[in-house]
Amino acid sequence: RSRIDDRLHHPVVCVSWFDAQAYCEWAGLRLPAEKEWEKAARGTDGRAYPWGNEQPQSNKHANFDMRHGKTTPPGQFSPAGDSPYGVSDLAGNVWEWTSSWFDTRGGISRTRVVRGGAWSSETINLCSTYRLDVDPMLRFNTVGFRVAAHLGDAGF
Image 1: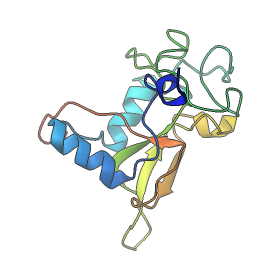
Image 2: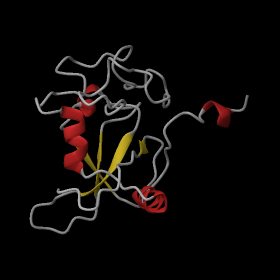
Image 3: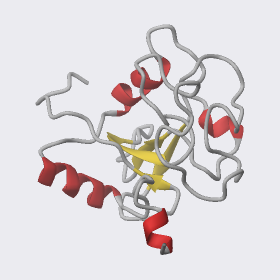
Image 4: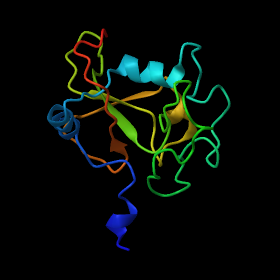
């Protein structure tokens, strides 16, 4: 088997925000808004991590802290690492692009929000409230995306 075959069932990485957005448009889908992403991760009870308030364990909850040295197939940490809505990999594995601009105080934002942490992230990055601003033109082997159903205006 080739190295490429080994990654067929891993999340896509090395995509810019524009790449992710173009895919969504092509597929009739969309990137989730940051508020949607956070609700999917925290639920209605405001948990610290998708699975609850327990500190993450790399062998139970998520792929992080360079333990695997690369992405892992989605769902590898299910159900222990899943959100209250049953969503897997909202913490660790890859940072995820959102449709949201990173708010700046009084300025015009030129960066987009990514959420969730990645396979190389420290524990703090997996917290459901942690956010990063990333230039939408850049590509990293730690940043990917997930899609949301196209519902017109998401209300956010």
